[in-house]
Amino acid sequence: MPPQPLAMSSLAALREGYERFDPRAYLQNNYLPPRADFSSEEFVVPWKLRCLAETFASGEICGRTLIDVGSGPTIYQLLSACDHFEEIVATDYLAVNREELGRWARGEPGTFDWSPFIQHVCKIEGRGEPWQEKERRLRGRLRRILPIDVHRPDPLGAPLRPPADALLSAFCLEAVSPDLAAFARALAHAGSLLRPGGHALLLGALGESFYLAGAARLPVVPLAEDDVRAALAGAGFALRDFRSYAMPPALRTGVDDVDGVFFAHAQKPPEA
Ligand SMILES: C[S@@+](CC[C@H](N)C(=O)[O-])C[C@H]1O[C@@H](n2cnc3c(N)ncnc32)[C@H](O)[C@@H]1O
Image (tube, rainbow, N blue to C red; front, side, top):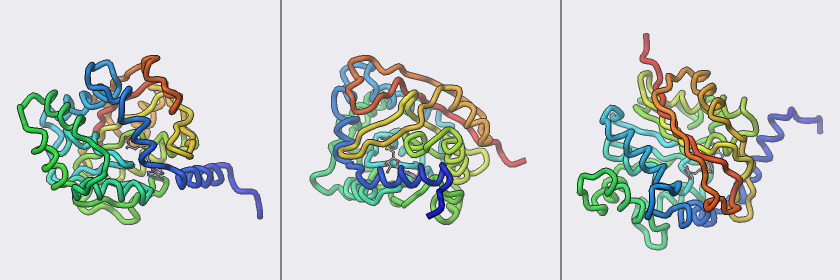
């Protein structure tokens, strides 16, 4: 067999790695204590939820459809978003993750318990909403759970019609890209799903080179804050807000080597 170009072979290796991705182990590593500890805003999960709650509280980001790119087996990232869109489209490359999300959306028993997350978001949103109502709203609005591959120029295999009013992606693009160039391309591909003038919200890992999900040890392209800013500018986005969080020593548990987390709010320019 002739030698493959580097980008091709490292993408193939990444895809092979994801065949061993274990949703349960991933959830346990990242969405149970110590990382998902709601007793203080110093922990990483409350920090992520606050970034999203504060950004959606402006009321500026709303519309018919929000697409979440690389949802994985998680829904925490959709809890503030779901109040502002008629439909939430979740996506993932792996069938195991799409199935896990589908089971949660249908309210089947034995799925991950997101209720502490929902309760916390209701608390910080401060509207006195019973958490079960938010849970019901998200389940009702999570109507499509689609396969996606951000390495394709058409990540869904066909254009999203109409394009999304907002795009969200959490910890996906850097975790599926062998290098910075692939990360920037993946961001541009995901951005093509968004309408002109639409908003993009990104959460992601800073300075991370790997993470574990059961038997899978997934490589991650280590990002600096400026890499994220440059990729957003390169994909044609205007940056509206950028925040970062340093991972405290107590949360460096060995399930990855992440240094911190970034949150970016960016906007696609309206059509001229
Ligand atoms: C680190 S997880 C992030 C999951 C979740 N969004 C979160 O916030 O925890 C990365 C996700 O990217 C998905 N993924 C892997 N390859 C992908 C690809 N080529 N395109 C889109 N998503 C991909 C994985 O299946 C996994 O669910």
